[in-house]
Image (cartoon, rainbow, N blue to C red; front, side, top):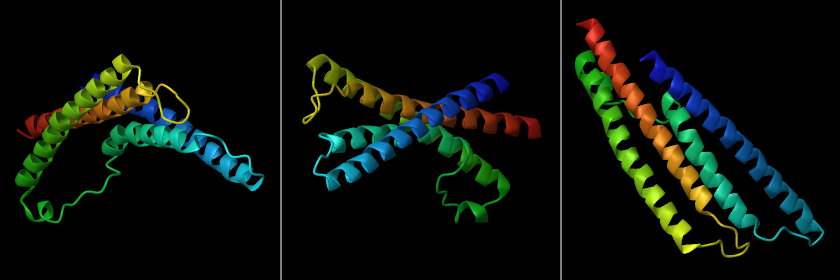
Length: 162
């Protein structure tokens, strides 16, 4: 279990660092574009690059957000349940997260392969963008893996109490 937790921590830390670099690039590009617009010299294709980088930022932060429980959690109902029921619901939620987002990661990967095979490029800059789609798939896979680790952690806690 410790191996899975450390692997999960390493993967999510690496993705968050890459996401942070993407945010920095996004902000630099957007700021430079605004400044250069003053001189009537805007960057061509800024919206495309900002959209690609924004998708990477969001996707790469998903697993870390789940791992640190930084996402919005609605526990109005689960607070009122006995601890055993609340624990079961938590495990069930992690199982649903794992299954749903592994399907999402797979479907995004399939979509990326279609783009790769068709040699589709972006409209303005004519940049290949399937790598960004694959990065989004990796982000969803990391979220699914985090759900898997949380699910197993919940099961081992349940066994420890027995």
